[in-house]
Every structure is written in C-alpha cells, then in structure tokens.
Image (cartoon, rainbow, N blue to C red; front, side):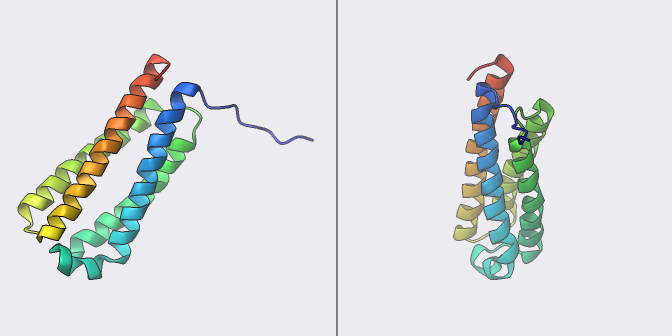
Amino acid sequence: MSTPVLPAAPAAARPLRAALRTDALACAGSGLVMAAGSALLSGPLGLPTALLLPAGLFLLPFAALLWLLAARAEPGVRGVRAVLAVNALWILGSVAVAALLGPTVLGVVFVLAQAAAVLGISAAEAFFLRGVLKGSV
C-alpha cells in the first residue's frame, strides 16, 4: 500500500506560498517576543504592557493561520486578500502607535521597523498573488 502524495504546487503559487511562510515566521517571532517579553520591553520601548501583550498574543494564532494558508497547494485568493487587509491595518496601527503613544526612540524604531517589514512582505504577497491570478510570476 502506498502513501498518498499531494500533487506538486502549481509553479505560480510557490513564491506566494513562500511569502506567506515568511509572514508566518515573522509574526510568530514578533508575537513571541512581544507576548513573552512585554513586561521587560515596556520600559525601554515606552509602550504599555497592555498594548504589547495583546498585540503579541494576536500575532501567534495569526501566524498559525498564515502557515496553514501557505500549506495549501493553491492558497485561496480570499484568504490572501484577508491577510493583506490585516497587514495594512497593522501598518496603519503601527504608524498611529509611533505617532500618538509617545514611545521612546527605541520604541519608535521597533514599531516602525515592524511596519516596514510588514509592508515589504505584503508587497511580495500582493505581487505573487497577481502572478497566481495571471497564471505565472
């Protein structure tokens, strides 16, 4: 008896799946740092634990969802668009936090570096999604 093998992912979906996995790993890493280290990071970043802890806890299941989406041979268009929407909200929220909550210089760098990373990953996801929709990248 042989083990069933999943068909190879269509070539056009491979870069999108890689971008989603990158997003998942970045979310998991940031989420762990913010959730586990919220009390230690609060002072140096000038951000309240009440912001860092829930933000970190949000990222952990979001990372799992991203990983599951990336595991599909062909990630669903709606799912990827939802990821892009959440990422856009994260970027806007990060800019708002940096501008309105008065973090330290290190806090501003921490928040805006995350926003820049999310922007870059989102740009890759959007580019590769267009490739999937067109049938090639």
